[in-house]
Amino acid sequence: MDEKRRRFEALALPHLDAATNLARWLARSSADADDIVQEAMLRAFRGFDTFRGSDAKPWLLAIVRNCFLSAASRTRRNAHMPLPDDDGSPQDAALVSGVPNPEQATIGADQSRKLDRVIAALPLEFREVLILRELEDLSYRDISIVTGAPLGTVMSRLSRARALAKEKWLTDVEGVRHGMQ
Image 1 (tube, rainbow, N blue to C red):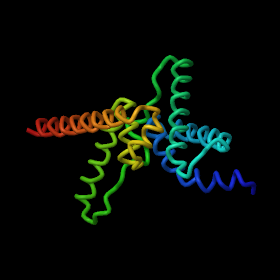
Image 2: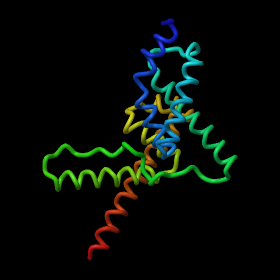
Image 3: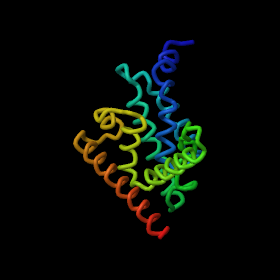
Image 4: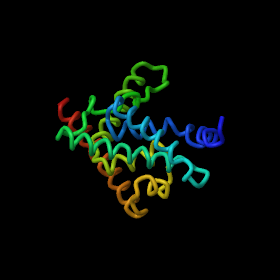
């Protein structure tokens, strides 16, 4: 095995799940996300000689984001329609509670699906920073690298994303309460 491939496998492949997760949230389609990740990994391997540093995660996620933006642009240009939306939420993203009580497990699963819908409904620029921070645990600096946005913009978008998600969550809860009365 050549040195480039060995280094790539050691530094980039451990972040394949993060790349797939980001692509699914951005594309909102598992099939499209798989295509985006495949293209991103090919681009990453081809350009791996230019990578400098020891943390490949922000670098790889920036490539995933760019592949998504390229694919979205091609789709809009070719089809003149928005990206397809499976069911409004990424597949494989809902976490099921390990609580043995079936009622609590059902409530937890419902809340997880609701959270998925709330996040999926956010505009792209807010959704991506929220996913990168809260699900991928990237620092603000790393999010800035991935998105190409200044640090202050990242902080502002993250704050706005959290506020929008909270507002949507609470609006949905109030709607359920009023519907039950």
